[in-house]
Image (tube, rainbow, N blue to C red; front, side, top):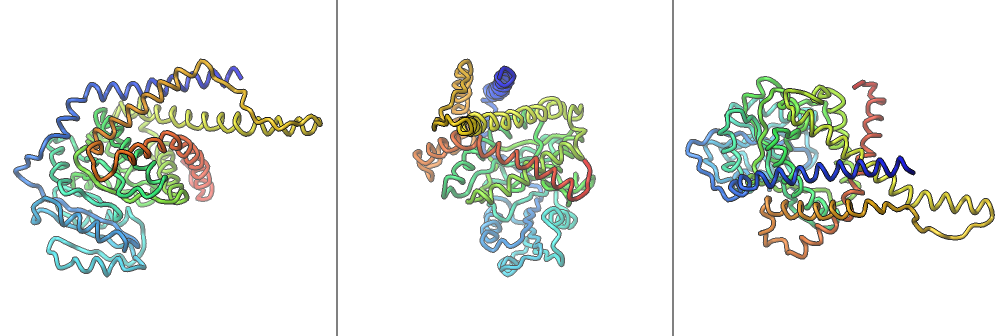
Length: 418
């Protein structure tokens, strides 16, 4: 019992330290962030941009994705849209063929299904633009996206910029939780950009200098090609920036099983990359903030999530059941599922952590612009925040634990070492 209490105390302390540190970074950079939010684009010389949309069986979404590209506030002669179809079996190709009338639109039909990364590599090999932007077929750009994101490349050391992703629709509790999670990710991704420690360039809207693909490409065998390529960039010592004004909207899973499959790939891909091809990033001097702080921090936070999940399950369910079975065998069983396990001295930590979570959620709304979004009522925003606070930890820790077993199984079944 003593070791559990000690471990809990240490993990709570480290979690609070990390949360408060991130909060202090935001406070220090608050003026920079608010200035960026209010700043309007002042581009004079527009570079050429190729937007690549890899697609497979996306007849429900591809029209909105392409239309959002065509409606961008950006010179049409400087913009090229490339859709790469990965042997879709629905009407995706037929819908895309309707856009071939536009001079800046190109449809590539693959003869063999080979995955998203392969589609991206094919399109990049045919693009000779200054920049390459990726867009998932289930996502859409906000009208000013390109103008806002291109300005970040005024810094010659910046080779990639990540967007601010928001959830397109929130039909149920699962999507409402993701709605807050994605806003929270905007907050986290901005902090990571200040630290030059961004380790994933998400598919819906990340943009790159075309020249970096002369050195490397998307890994076609990787679970998370957008994370893997960001880790490659971090090894070069170059910068990945973030734009809070470059907004994309993406479709998120409605059902818990679909969310589980998505996170199995995300979390499992992170584990596979960190312990696999990119384990040299741990304590790397090429990206010191990522190697010496963020990656170890992720280990601590992930372990803390798993530890708290196990202790919650054990003392809430397993121990009472074992006690009941023991008494049943001894013939003195009484139905008593009361929880006797208490961390009295942890109450203050829990309260502080809860208050910090509320502050962070508020800042996430502020930085993402959602605080002024009239399309979502304040009541719905509040409900989403409550659902997030109540259920996100349980969902995250459960899925992360499952991802560990998934990666172990994947390595054994593929007979592939780290």
